Image (cartoon, rainbow, N blue to C red):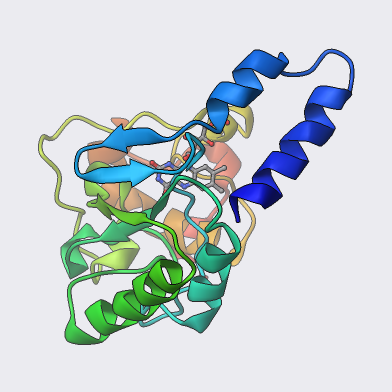
Length: 201
Ligand SMILES: Cc1cc2nc3c(=O)[nH]c(=O)nc-3n(C[C@H](O)[C@H](O)[C@H](O)COP(=O)(O)O)c2cc1C
């Protein structure tokens, strides 16, 4: 597995204006992380994939994805919610039911069998969630401070924090009148959101 990474890195260092070879060599030195010895210093960052299905149960597709990356020194698996209340992303995995735990065991067993190490990133979306994930109730957060809209949402001119257009967005806009005061400080959806607040979504 490490040989795969080494071959790829050799290809990079052979090209001009890429990683200096002494840095590339350091990348492939072992690293002691607590009681783990990572065979190299490549760490896969957590990346939400949204492949866990509506039930949020880790599955063979996810195991395959992580096994494909098992030549890394360490994999940090995607953000994974710790309770129903923590949810706020479509089809991201959870780890709060027996079925979810069993699903993750399938993933970790496959990664361990491939010779790698995997950590799980635990997730509560707090104020970044939405009432549509909570039966219409506002998300639970550590404070009442509104979440800032993402830069991409600002580019769209949408103070609801999401773009206007997709099915998901329409569902979000429908909830704007009840949530906008708490989320955006505005009493009604921005005009560019149209009348999505009363649509069937
Ligand atoms: C599609 C996608 C999903 C991501 N999911 C997570 C996640 O679940 N947890 C997390 O902490 N960061 C997540 N991130 C952030 C990445 O882990 C990473 O920090 C970010 O892409 C910046 O890394 P870079 O500076 O190496 O590009 C995600 C990023 C992308 C693009």
